[in-house]
Length: 411
Image (cartoon, rainbow, N blue to C red; front, side, top):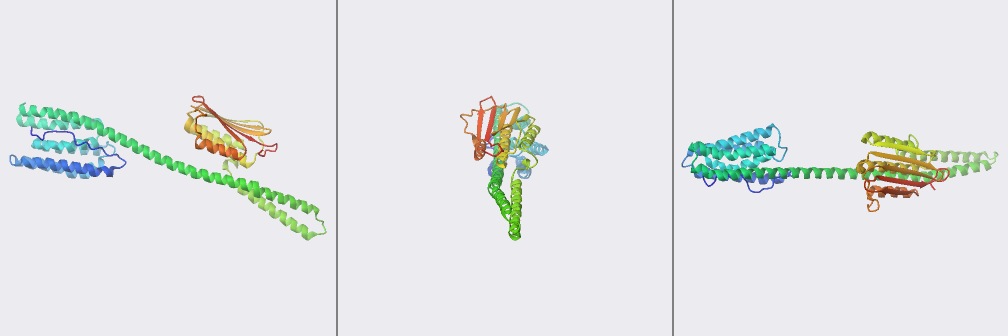
């Protein structure tokens, strides 16, 4: 065997991560081109002895160049399955075997052939084909000599080393490709999560602003218009029937204020959560609980205790949002199988409790996170208190208490 025998391991070039193949195509193209030029140089250096064999071997190796450029280049760094991968590897192996059987100097092309096989076939089929490729030079010597001689025995150690290095390289390339794909999947998941967080933050900001506007309209414009109507009605009762012009002007003022109050109330309804339009707070919470059970398969129970009475829109909105956020946390983080939502109406307060049997957490050590901080801020705006009770493997309970007066107004 000549000194350029069947080595089977290329330079330690890192396999390309699929998320940035363009970065690595140039490196592999250069490596394959250098391997081809070195092999062709070795062939031509011995062409004086066997010019016909050298020409055939060179033609077979040269055919590998357009075959790689036109077919193989599209297959590397992608999923290593499919009939195109098998076809490319079959033709690649055939051309290499032909060149090596004709001229043993072509065995140097293993430096390029083995990486191509490893990057276009699944791991174990690629290793198997690479092992067979390493045996081709040995077969070439045996066919030439027809017997086992010193030259064949000299090739054997190099062949065995090439087989071992091919197996190691195959495992290494497969591991790098797998890790690169996992990293690409994580990056893509991170990108999607960032987009989702941005979208949810935008939607939450819009919802919060809508709720703030609804509270402002309800607590200022609507209340002021109600006071105006009351004052006009009082003035109307004081005006004598003998002053029809003043009485008519007061009537017009009362009707205009009443119309403005009706429009303000419509704005408040339009700016509040749709789930509160069709019924009471208890109905809205129960619908959300039923939706959670349907979507996740959890056992979700909603209970109302006491006689439900009308609540200010701001209180209804906050309690509904807290219930939704708490149930969303149960779905995403707790690993629970059961969640209970209780809405309790007492003479001077309303209480919401969301209890799950999930994994829980150390409430005293936890930083709270944006979700809990946001819920606490909402509850504080209406004068309520939010309490979190949880321990590892003991589930979580979120309780909201809001003081109200006898008429259902916030205390």
